[in-house]
Image (tube, rainbow, N blue to C red):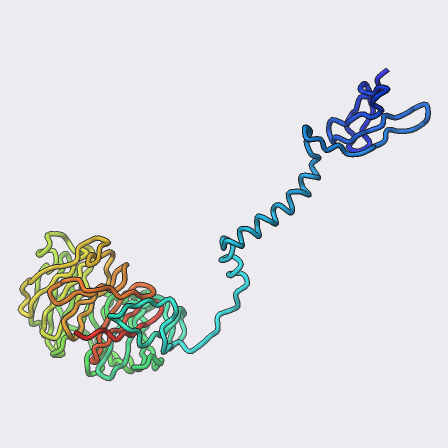
Length: 380
């Protein structure tokens, strides 16, 4: 008579109905062990003979686990070999960065340039210490070659010598101050745009000397002219350009400078001026540059929104060199145009050119949030 007994391997019920004279063993349907049924007369319990690994049955779960472990190891090695896991391994194993002088005579490996511009100096790193920047977007150069860098938030202005060595720092406003513009004249006076006004400071020490007088607040940017005057961007329901002489007297106003020329409103304007007194207004909402003569008359516009060479995408800064070429910082780098607005080339850099200025040697200084780059540009 068939009997049912428990598998000594896994405890599952097993029937001995399959036993015959030609087959003295029976297989457990759960763990696939080959068993000898118990012999109650002889007092022998059921015994495991061997584990059956037939092609038609399923492997025991513990065998699948043993096979999965080396398979997983092989997959990990394969992924590491093709570089998928390399960034993870690198981030875990790389040593702490060496602390060095923030001024670097040579450009970093990631700094890309072209034959038009050569990196002469690169200094600064992310941080809040002396010579370090958190979110710097304004830069100015005075007649002695001192470099002034302003943080966008908090009003901190750092002073460096011509070689990028930290000299001093001072602050305007309070920790909530938003610094919109920065300029310096040849006498070492620094003009700071914040809170809708323009304040004047002695650049080397940070001593406040007064404020630019105007009937209403609303200034958004400032730049110095070759004659010692100032050209400013003013915004209050319209985009005006206001020029002052060296004594702070208004000498020219271009009302609705960009919006009247383009037909579209402009809410954020950057300004630059060349040695002949021509004024360039960068409309960051219009994605274009607008050129005005020294008499304030509109001359032409160039740029336009797009990703092709000469078109602009999220422009933020503008400067003019000693040859009348116009430099515009946007998402693609620093695009260069001739005096008539024809596209010439692009200078690549690490980060975005939030602020640009030229010194008396026609060398370009760029602030890219956490570092300053100095370029020698190609002559005509």
